Length: 104
Image 1: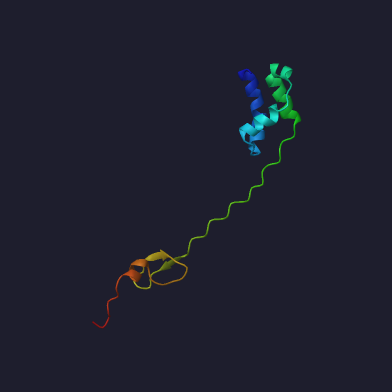
Image 2: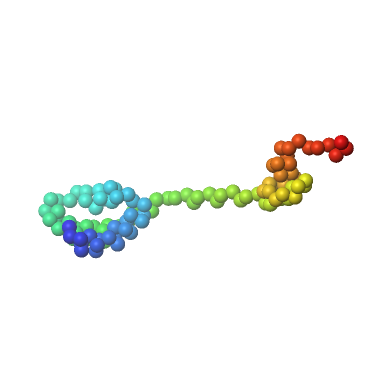
């Protein structure tokens, strides 16, 4: 097959590959059951089969789940640091540090 013939076939092959069909399955679909005398003009044969054969149905793809939304910004009740959390309260540093007794 010449380069010019390959370039002419590229758009049709791209449409088939866009349906989700892999290359080996496409080659099998287009070349299975061919008589030997058709193999002398492969580009013409492929052009005919690409045009004549119906495209396979695209594979069913489930939509990707939406990523979870981040928690809203909160302001720490002790140090006024901004952090993300589902509810207001203390930031990580204030939760983890020992509290000083205000009466000491």
